[in-house]
Each structure stands twice: as structure tokens, then as C-alpha cells.
Figure (cartoon, rainbow, N blue to C red):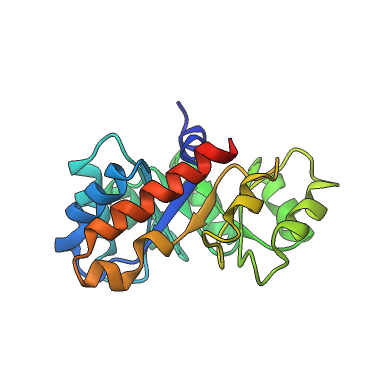
Length: 210
């Protein structure tokens, strides 16, 4: 199964900010126990690469990727750590080409038709829609899906349990990125029971809709 197919099957992609790599194993276990077998570790912290590596090594059944990748150097660091996919908030042609040359799945961020067309030139058909709620949410995605019927999206930004169902019902959305089940405060407080419960609730929502 290809990476994007695995993410689509999961339905909700937990977006994690890891400040302390020593908590990565417990985090991975909690999310997996809750029924979500994919995760995006954002490269906003110094602990990100090591945390990604720990999750991937301890839970090989999980599909683990790197987010907030802004440079080719970050992309290579993520690949070295075991990332199976690369996510960017925007569409940097250098990062996109680098990932394609490395034959690793890349999910660039888009918000406008021009950015979508830029990615189509690279042959990319699945893109991150960011920041989802601020950029118009489901209505904007549905509008974009009119002229771009062959494009699918992973919206991220402002998605939570109260609106995620609306997103998941949209045919052009393969999965939703969200951080509500893996909040930094929960990780900092070692509240992995709550993370597991919220992950389970998220997984149940996917099953309910799909």
C-alpha cells in the first residue's frame, strides 16, 4: 500500500510537536492504541528528528512523516530519521523537486489555484490545504475541486472534533490533519491516556463517516 493510501485509510493525521524526544515512544504507543496508525512530526523543534526516528523504530506498523519542512536540508534530515512522507506549509519548488528526486512522497501546502497548478506541473495530485479554516474551509475546497477534479486534499489548520466530520464528508479530502488529540500540553504532562482516548474518538469519527 502506498503512503497516501495509508494516510487515506487512517483518515485523520495527528500533527505532533515534540519538545522532548524521550516522550516519543509513549506518544506513538498512545496514538496507535487509539486506532490511528499514521502521524506527522512537525520539524519546529530540535527534538523532531530524533522523535520521528524513535516512533518509526518502535512502531514500524505506523506511517510516520515530517511536517513543516521548509528547506531541502530539513527534508534530508527527516529522510535520514526515517520519514516516509514530507509535508510543507507551502509549495517550495526546491523542496518538491528534492523529495521527488529522493523518491519520497511529498505533500506541499496550497491555498490558491496558482499553487495547485504549480504542483500539478510536478505531477503532484494530493496537496495539503493550509491553513484550512482560515482559508475558507470545506467551502473553499469544494470550490477548488470544481476546476481541479483530479486533485485531492489533506486540510490542516483549525480542524477539531466539532468540524472534522464536515471535512471528511467531502469527496476530494482523503484525510484531515489535526492536533487536538496530541496537544503539546497533554504530551508535556505525560497524559497519554487522554491522547489514546482522543485518538480513539478520532478514529471512531472516521469509521462513522466512511
